[in-house]
Length: 175
Image (cartoon, rainbow, N blue to C red):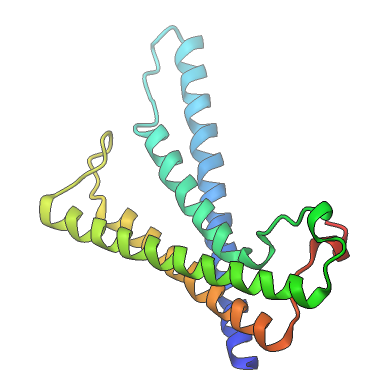
């Protein structure tokens, strides 16, 4: 079990890193785009540099950031409503959380399969992004990898919950 927990922790940290890099890229592209537009405005159009495809870049890196965050923090993703769970024993809450984690495992597998199929279609039919004309294959491929990370972490966390009965409980942590 300790080996699986180490794998889960490694995947979580990797996804946190990917999500962090994605957010940094989003901020940098947005700052560059706003600055270029402002310089264009104050120079009366003399300086015509713009960030091509900035909306596209931001949207795809936002996809990566969200998928990475979901995979990194899947064990903390359930919102527990006190009204429904305050009288439940910890064992029942743990069982419910284990089932939810299995559900996330299924969702991760479905996402992975769909994105993998989309990546194959992108190669076969030459799908490209609208503005930058980049192949969609790497975008779908990275998204599929992040989705399989979600599935793996969800499965490991579910096994851990069913085996130990321990899970992240936001009520106890005050989060």
